[in-house]
Length: 392
Image (cartoon, rainbow, N blue to C red):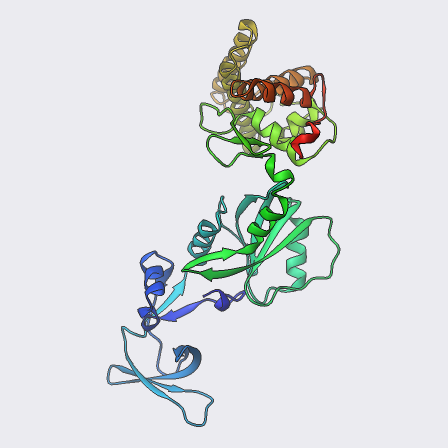
């Protein structure tokens, strides 16, 4: 199956090919979509003695006569219309199965030109990686342009058969792997090789947000991290994951706060909204601001050390935004100016979110939690400096 995937070309099999148990299971799983039988005079591929050969099809009294093409002594086969009904591979469904077998999470996305995002995977000791499968025949220029434009700095490129070639310079980290079929499942050594190479170093200390609840490993010891009422990792977990991915580079709480909210940072310094009709983008921006305020309130309600007056302020902010929403969208979308938060509030939010993570680790091991707190420091600037024996 893998060697049949070619950029821009449909993957089509006749029903008679599905007599093989594995292919039959793929049909039942919805990987193939049934179509129509070929027309008289069409050329199709048929597998004979384990080899794919080209045959010309002729319809004779409701039966298909197939004659091999391009050989001195052509073989002749006969099939019913049902046996030669063509089935087309659903690539999206197929790559979902590949992702499941490889342990890759996330949504399968068609990137075009024979390139498929299979999902995301956090490689041991490295940034979260986007996993891309490259079908045969993808032009080098297309591959280069796609990878250079991708926002991910770590990319895992999977292929089958002859590896795609490239000679361009890139500041991205690229890993290559071959997908094979083993015991009826898709597998690649690339993830196992990376895990083995990191097992004695940074793999012993890592953070994993794709699990529920999210988890932190320190020197091989597992710690559960907090989760929001919505069932997702808290902002504190996301801040810590960002710091894991960016080493010991110092970053202000302001920049850390907006590193997870780039769309909000673009609005900082602007005049806000005036007494004009809110366009669709304005409505989306307001809804996003309300969602952020609601998420911050959830964080505050989870923090047992949150002062009562600050918790009340968070509730008041959500209440005010909800009232504004009712007024704004109840009067043909007219608005008044909305002011962004200042740097002091960003520092408080980031530090409180990180403290919730530290306290969660402390509840499981007080010494490790204290060490995590010391590694994050205090104040407006965050420089993640874990103890040397964590081997991060």
